[in-house]
Amino acid sequence: MASSYTISETATFTLTHAKHMAAKVAADLKRLQRFYGYPSDQDIANYETEVIELLNNGYLGTLTIGFKRDNSWIEPTLRYTAHDLAGAAANDDDPGRVRPGANVSGASLHNFLTYTMAWNALSATEQDAFKKRMPFYRTGATEPTINGYLINDRIYSAGGRALNRASVRSY
Image 1 (tube, helix red, strand yellow):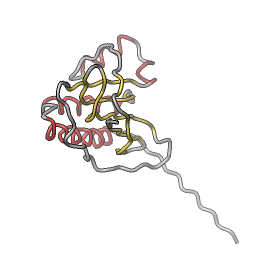
Image 2 (cartoon, rainbow, N blue to C red):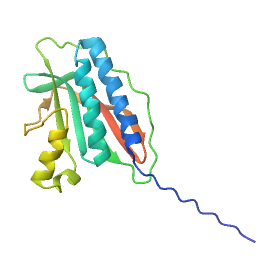
Image 3 (cartoon, rainbow, N blue to C red):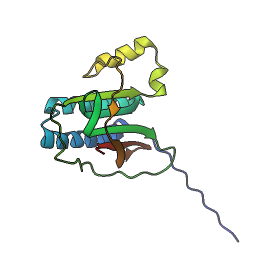
């Protein structure tokens, strides 16, 4: 006699999952602050709030935070890309490993956000209402180029979603 078993699993993304992942982004930013003096504690708290809300609502495409010189991202810059795991598993790495000692002279801290198709499906009124609740009111801008290359170095996941972190490296 043969037996067969079926296991079914569903993952529901919750506010708790969004907070878990956003806390890892905040920890990375504290590391940037420790090595390079920026972002401020208030900015880190604001980024964390924004990431929680964007993840929880399914609106976060990419968030890039780091240093920009001559309209190009330089090392140390971190890019977070959100995606649905679609039933697959992913690591939930510890935050950190931001490299110290990069040359940031003449550079300033910047950030750039892209949204998902779920965001694009909102009306302009709904988008504006959401933006007004956020710590930063974002307007259109051109994404800077990268002076170097991106290397995927961390994955933060919870509740069937993940944030892939990539770091800018110099040539």
